[in-house]
Length: 504
Image (cartoon, rainbow, N blue to C red):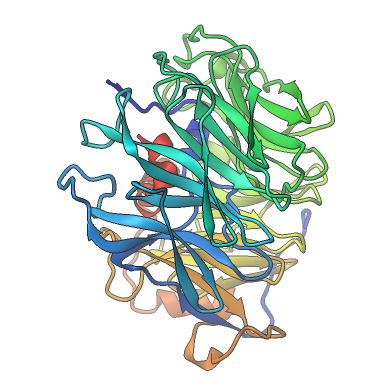
């Protein structure tokens, strides 16, 4: 029995994780309405499956997954660490709706939501998969990509005679992009244990996007891409492992209405596409020539591919950078290591320029998403005080949110923010995270009772408040230590079904 192996989607789970003008402090207090979206009676709720997943649309509707009251009947060999079953949900206007599962299934999760409120995700079935191992279970239930539309669940199924599939996103036209096994032949390089291909599903028809010559391909997240004729992703070129990486040569690709374009690397043998925008631009990251640093710590740079031109987006002086989101203005955000790989900072790439977004005095930060207005959401950590904050970068302002959302993942064009955080009484080591929504109070008809909720303060005020009475960490974290710790935290928080096929 083969364990799930990370290949085409590996860099999605690093999770460690305008221009050159100084960032100014926020000039005034701003208030948000803070909403805990809750669960279905169980301890945990889950947010983003992959960086680049859109789980909050511009109408303020949120998709996610939450535990139900039913313990996993396979305990202690559970699919989830908290040993509860979870279902996908839709939250709208204060109402949390259980989206259920495929008939006979026990668990479901989500990958994205579109402007219509349609939700793509995954559900277990009543059948087991003899090929893959799943956690501690001897037999893992099969999982299929699904679409929730107008109150009904549509099972998308698999390619060929494959047993497993998952969705990556659904665009506004209703096209679902995902990946599926195509047969049950053993494949040592697939995280599903069998040859895996990217697909696009439209109006009941599932189309295999193929590969660049190797056995496997996988799509990226959707970010802001709403074109049903454009899909970004990654594919092996052959089946011969490279000595430096242990895997076959892997390139990013752009599928454009039936044509699969090979996006080359920055010189190494491994690259992947993170997402495309409506202009056909693709961001991703790539190994450097000679696969320097591999296999233990491959040096990789973020890149932008624009109509045949590949650009190395660079770093902040270190060996690594990673983009997470690309909007339709061509602005990308993520993080990059600083000189000597001492720290990693939230990063903006725009018009060929790289901007360090790190708040003054903090040592680590990440930018997770950017909306069409250029507002960016992420998180920042201060090594001296031990404070981890949600951060909004709005033009030249840095605003730190004094709210329990250590991992904000989406910001829509109304400035609303969703992410995963710890409700009162929940400790970092517990399995009890919830999904939250922040609604700006100013000029937003959906925000009420803001005096009962979180207040956002300027960077300097927030830091002064947090530092009071806090022991000094004496900068005991290195960038590597913090990336490792943050990656472990992300895996605990994002352990919904959508990750089952790529975490293990």
